[in-house]
Length: 99
Picture (tube, rainbow, N blue to C red):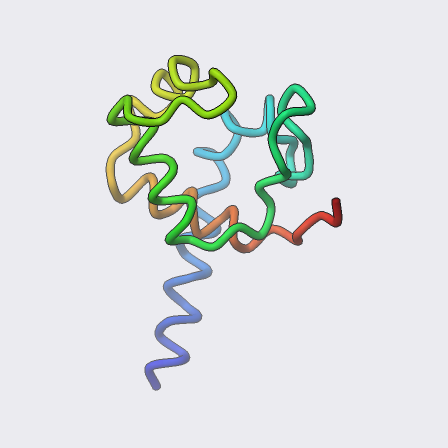
């Protein structure tokens, strides 16, 4: 029963995160497959906990990897914790890209 509930909740998160991910897709690609400015790794398939940690750090202004801190702080500023979890769940659901 718990597995079924988890699966249903995951589907809801993934379905509702897609519009939130549209802003991300400009740099990261529709499927999280792009290397942003050839500096970053593709984000597709990253673990939820890792994405949440990274996005919260950008939002707090404590992360500036590759000099993207200001831009990413602007991208994450309006995201609630629930939004961040939804985006992270969506990113994890994307098929990882071989690099």
